[in-house]
Length: 307
Image: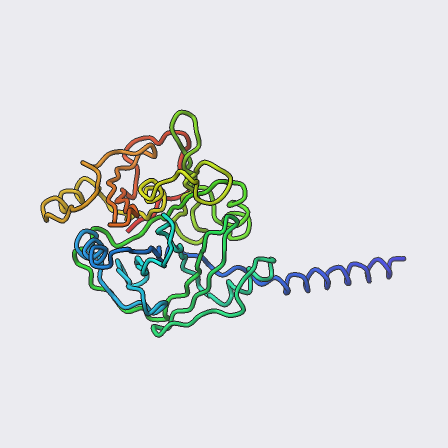
């Protein structure tokens, strides 16, 4: 009887080990890589990202029709030509930095997530692939080159993209991907009038975060949502030590053009922020790394990002 029990334990252990080997570990997700947006006016968009934001203009190894506006060696805004027949949507995808694109592809595939057959390779040595989140939003995972080339962007208003956000209808559904599968962890949530409007999930191996911009309806872009309203929700945030000081730099350099806030303000999360919009309405949120007031609705449950 004892020998049978021992044999059963050994078989169970070997089965468990085999199952563990069948599901590879998740590679590290260390931060935001980029946000990819569409432009209907390439010249105007170029002026915005080079002059207002202060990013460095570079070729796009992912898409020869695109342009990169880099804030650092590993973070940038990718601008793509607006497709024919496009709707009000100006966001193409968000992207996260991973230690291994192929490892991440295999991990997601082993977990039953639909993935491409292989990763893509760029001329700069980067590797990437894309999947769809539970609501059909495209999310990329990018493995930067082994030795990223330094970027010269001395006029950038900041050099660290600390969060990205886009419209979400079902928080629980998105959590199955970002929290349960990828290991993102809660950072902060809040809203006005007791309503949940924003929910932030921080990446598992860094401090950058994804912001669910909770919206009406059950799926897709609401029929009555304008391009202007959608652009407020589809956004990226550049972290700075002091938004009021960053605003002074923008104003003194006559860089503020087009649509933007009248002045910096403190958001419900207790952090100073200042919003600017590219020519197609995508929001650039300049935000303090740390809160100067107590946040509403929820305490911060993870460490703040830093420069």
